[in-house]
Length: 385
Ligand SMILES: *Cc1c(COP(=O)(O)O)cnc(C)c1O
Image (cartoon, rainbow, N blue to C red):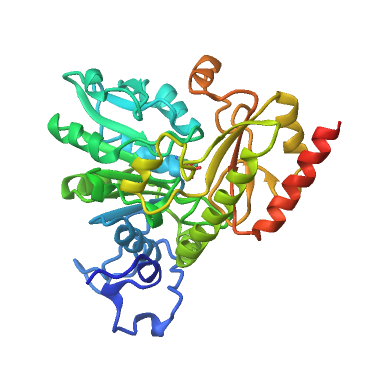
């Protein structure tokens, strides 16, 4: 019987029944760059930390188990992970990419990958017929679901079928839901990307990234690349992410509860013109999410009637921090126009629906009543002006 995800967040089956590391319950931080050899031509299994480190390896096994992959690679950030992944493609290759991706991804594809000879067609993967964009040199489909920040939901199973039919890789950035709520490999994806900085780490205290796959050929390529390019996660950061993962489940549940309550509250506010949260029944992706995920997450986007109101909210909040990033225990509010999506050309930003009135909220695990009380106070103050 497969163990539940909360158990898998804490225990790695393969190391059980042993009292390695003096029986330490918290996996030790092997803060070492290199390893002594028992003899010529012999190895402890570890030779040099760019290749592998025990703390990092333990974390990778935990993440692989959470996503149902055969291998997971831990990298120094989400962007380091995506950059490494792009190295499996060669000049002349073509990718179909979701139009409403994380801003840093759009920047990477536009300014680095294109320079390396890779071309892209952007598609609204939640609506468009993707098959029409496939060219003879197309090698992969790259999606996020729900997207950042517009929360568009794509049908992973359906896109995976198209990918299989045309022999393309399906890459899914699963950062927004984490393996607690969604497992794209089980739905037909070949590679899952995570910014471990977000829900997996969960404490806004370090950066990390992951690539998870269930294909031996891809794992082999990525292992060669990580050892060659050197962006692996460091031992202490690996330990921080391991510690964060221990509470993934209870954090995701509490943050989701807060998101649902705030989404309902926002809907009733006269200065709010739109609330986009997949947990709301009226969200166009609600039914698909029910089929492919176990929850709706804690990311929501809303629009105010004026830019001035959006800016006033950002300057008045106190418990809720006006900061980039998401997925941590603290509630954060973001202004995509000048933060996460500042480098995305204005016309594309507007086309994707991001305006001067768009705000993105990542709910944390605070008491919901305190978050609502703060929002009530802020909205009353703004409206009385
Ligand atoms: C933050 C984020 C990234 C980039 O990860 P970093 O850890 O910040 O480098 C990629 N994808 C999504 C969806 C993100 O939210």
